[in-house]
Structure formats: structure tokens, C-alpha cells
Length: 137
Image (cartoon, rainbow, N blue to C red):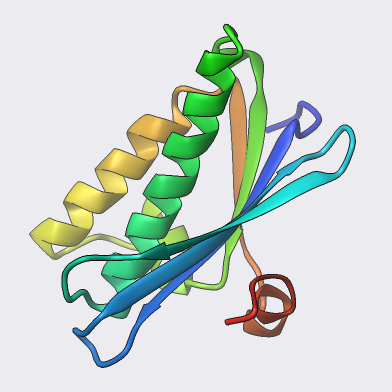
């Protein structure tokens, strides 16, 4: 993505046990004015850490698309930078790692479809410590 970033999503998900009760959080930031909202999620079924990461990323992208559309705009008019600490999720979505498991392929494909709705996007893995500073877990 060469255009300036309009929105930033910082996400993290996990589970207590693997699989187990799952949770996630994301910070959605409008870059122009720095306005940020942190959203906490609790999932209603046991998940693995990787599933919780994907579910959180999907929830964040879906939330942003919904906000844009409620403002009577189109996501393809905006760019988004998505950052998380999950090497597996980021690399599978980018295509540098294969998604061998059918569930992970379905998650990867769902994320790619959401990202393709934007005018541009960038994915980046961030160190865990930076994620914890923002999201608290």
C-alpha cells in the first residue's frame, strides 16, 4: 500500500486453554485525528488461540466496514493498516505461510475478502509487548 493510512487496527485474541474460553480485543484508530476506541470481545464457544486471533481480526474489520458504510461512504475510499502479534495469522493472510488446516484457510479467506473491500491495506506483525501496552493483554 502506497497511500497514506486512514485507519489502524491493532488486534489480539487468545484462549484460556487451547482450545478453551476465548477472548479478543482491538483498537480502532482514525489516523487523521488520532481518535481511538478499544473494543473487548468474549466468544461464546471454546477456541484455539489462532481461531481467537482470526475471529478478533474479522470482528475489527467488519466493525470498521460497518462504521464507514453507516456514514454513507464506501470502504474502497479508505486504507487500513492491520497489526497484531500473531505470526501465524499475519503470514497466512499475506500468503507467506500456507494455511494447511481447512479451518485456518476459511479464516484466511474471510480476512482477505474483508481487506479487499478497502482501497488499500497493510498488514504487519508487531512485538507482543507493544500489543500489551495498548490492549492490556
